[in-house]
Length: 247
Image (cartoon, rainbow, N blue to C red):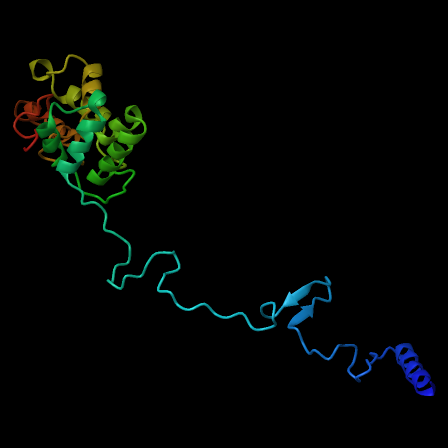
């Protein structure tokens, strides 16, 4: 009886001092089972697991050969990045003839091919600038969304999108022509007719001396200031001998 009272007294004394009490086996405040792998977050009171429910560390899964994107690593050296479709006039004209039937600026597929041969290649995915890449992009979009909007961008003129900044303009060409090719040498009915027809032409560049471009006609219209008889024909609507497809 006295021994029980002694143990009880020691426990009361320990609690008063803030020390952990011992169980009957002498272990501080526990059952003698050891750590369970659970920690208590002092700020929240939540239990945190160092391992699984048994106290064992969580095992690291083995390497399965799958890449981080979920695809199989076949070991063939493939990166999954396929090259873009090769740009070409045949591909472009085929797409255009299908997507832009109601807005076509070409008489037939060969006419399209002849125009296409004049353009810089550019890059697949070009969305603006004078290139086959830009026109191919817009004719592709036209086939799946809005042909009325995108077919003009995909055509010869580029309609203010597939055209280089600073390219020869219809205003430049028509003004030069009407100033330098007068009387019987002027084959346009009016300035308005010149501007309207010119709007569908390929702008080309300011240095063009051949080809069915605004730049070519503007070049010869400028030369016509010194020799109208020689140069107004090349500057006219039909392009004479020089400003024609394949010229």
